[in-house]
Length: 369
View (cartoon, rainbow, N blue to C red):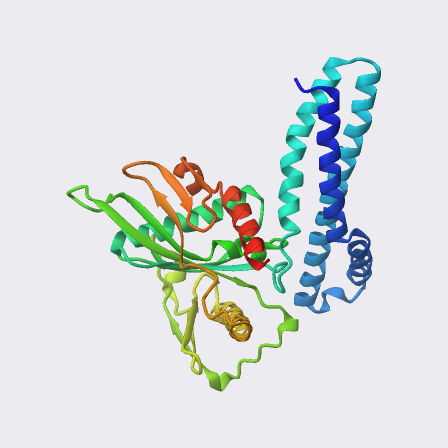
């Protein structure tokens, strides 16, 4: 059991960390934003424009959750500072043990919030648009892509982040060719953007009759979801729209009409599709949002490349292959950039990704200087 002085030192260290977080988060500004959004939300004609109303209420909910999270941590930490003094004064060893136990739970929460303050990119606070694609490795790669899809959906579920799946293209034998979905949460893009790159799986192939070891690859793309302020105009003359019958296992009712939409952006050759909404109109709107996000990212990448050229840095700061999942001959998941690794791939595939994501965010901030 720690001494009272050691416990006080831990409380003081957490207090210093939380104070720096509060300065970065800027609670007074956030509370002012909340007051303005509450004013807009109370307008009698708010729901005349449903899309605007949803943006207002969604942003209000997120900001309030953020403020409540920081304020809640502050309240709990301040309570512990008072409790430790009372425990020492009354020589109450049981109370001291309770303070230690509370600190053990509070510490990781403050650390997780500290990682959030490292997300200061232009679009980091946006929702994330994630696309997973099978790459080299045939049916094993398609199966691996589906494993990654489940992994990210489980991660979002653990955090109670809403997810909307926009498109899944199933492979013929097993798994998926690709999938696109959004994660709707504060800083979802900034958080998940460190997952972008090529993921590698090594295992005994369940699709090989001879039980040989197979290496397969899947790519993860993470983009910020576009907002009205982005002003990305896509003239109708720049796109070709094709409709087709939705595909998927089980012969769902969506397969009976040509409601799926594929959009080709003629100037760039970018192709996006959406088939998970009920109507052709909804699928076209969703596909256009995906296309806008990809054009936004393209513009951002071009601007970044220009800046690197001006700085004399022609190399890409991101390696393509970023994580290996090894199931045979040993069990390990290792991030090739941060060196973060764990020996329990099953837990990672079940959505236990926070250690990798936090390490990736810290690694990126160090690289940015």
